[in-house]
Image (cartoon, rainbow, N blue to C red):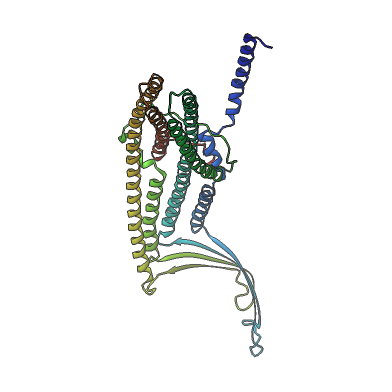
Length: 429
């Protein structure tokens, strides 16, 4: 049989081993940034935005190509009706092959406007990509703290059930010696059953949140999470956050689309201007009276005179689209400002609530300890102890919830003001 000192030594060694294994086990738990990095790899929305950038860049290259010459190879073979006279000037068999080059000289400057328009749309698509990342970060943060809050709630309920079970055992002992009534034990048992029912509801909510985690990250649903975020000691002013409004990707994308819409007016107006092209042909083979002519050059001027009113209509449509884009940019900016104002106010209230709940929880804990002591002295009833225990646990759950809510709102505010350093972007698509 081991001595008391030997048992104590063994217990300390086992505790040290457990503590030593703790960090290794915790190292596999995901932080918010690690979760976000996994979600970036998984997200089809972000990947789609990356492909849209490639498409916009290719459309810009297509617009640039209108300034360059085009070269075509043309070949034909013509048979005339047998009734035609076969002459040197007009043979009945006419093979024809040539190289044709066309160089645009003037198109009403609409090609330059089209290039500026496409370039603006490339920029807008790049901002849409960054906005998709920001939205994904918000979704990840929401799910991250939903899971942590639900799991903390479950731990709090387990603690509350454990305290009530201890209370039940204490009351059963007092009932046996006639110092408490059986009804007091029944009241505690009712509370335990109610708490267990609430635990079942929370477990269902946690399962749903964990499934959302698996969907966003592509990792197993039971992957442990670790909160490494800390709230700042002080909060910057609202003006500091609003000063970053123009850096938001959604605001910049709307402004880029407004620029593109204005350039589209120039494109539509340019279609009403004359166009001048230089055409050149190099003949490889042909028959007839021009058989000995190897090349020719043509300067072609085209003046649009009437197109059924379609050109004027296109200009009016472009002006309307520009007005629509301007209204859209204004709306996006106002919504962005409202989001920052609302989130900043939420964070201010979160911090105040958190401070109040910390004081209330500490006071409730002390009250519960006092009520337990007074009950043993016969100064208060069992109902007073149960009420003090419930108030303490309710405050403790509210405190933990408030901490997660405060962190979530602060992170959303940082993301809304483009201040949150999220997962590395890598090469810009």
